[in-house]
Amino acid sequence: MLTIAFHITEGPVFRSFSFALAFLAVTMGLSEKAAAQIRVVKINVASAAFAAPSISYERVKDKQFSWQLTLSYRPEWKGPHLLYHRFDEGWSYEGGRTRVAGGQFAYRWYTRKGRTQATKPYFAFYAQYQDWKGSATHRFDQTSYAFKGNWRHTTIGLQYGVQWVIQKRWAIDLTLVGFGLQFAELSGSGNTGSEANIGLWEENLLSIPIIGQRMLMEGDDGDYTFNERYTGVGLHSALRIGLLF
Image (cartoon, rainbow, N blue to C red; front, top):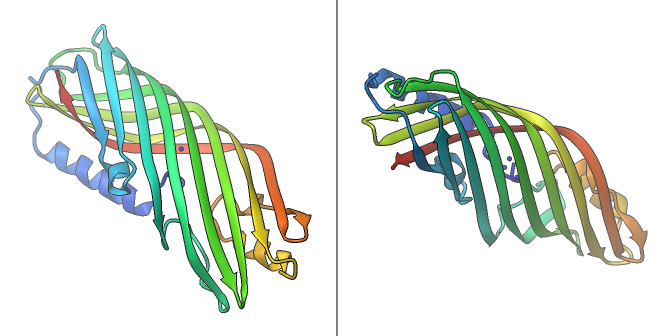
């Protein structure tokens, strides 16, 4: 897509880690004689830390332009901490599942063309798609509230970053910032007892970052659905380590 969780590769922890590693790379005194990349296979170490492996393949053309394809997938997970939930008095969390899959295409322009440049800033046009599926069950007093959701979004925008080439073999690729127009669809269903307080449940769902306010239930007698299409601003950053060949 977290792309938060929903593709959670953004946030203060990730940004701190990214800039720390970038600073380390600069202070290592990278050789200006390092060769520019031709083909690079990379992994996104930030998303891997959240058990959402992401692999990229970059092919450089004319030393200055390149295209990069990224695929990411996190198999279905089960557990009590996979979905954000509230701990207000009276509420408990019985469990949930999540699965995330997505892809990104980027076309880059490196501002430095020379093959001997070890530090190579770049601008890129990118298009990204993410599909998140999840389910969770909450309980309030003696009533269970279960929902299943599907969040799909496509983002088109621009990126800025820097790639460092080390000893003609390794690369550190830091996408500092990416932003664009996001087209999203959120759909799903909910089930609970007919005597349940649906308003209380909707209030609880509001605590889910970004999409909670979109889960407005429609229905009655314990069976509900939600569906909304909307546009917004999508953000992206990444820290990749790659091998040249």
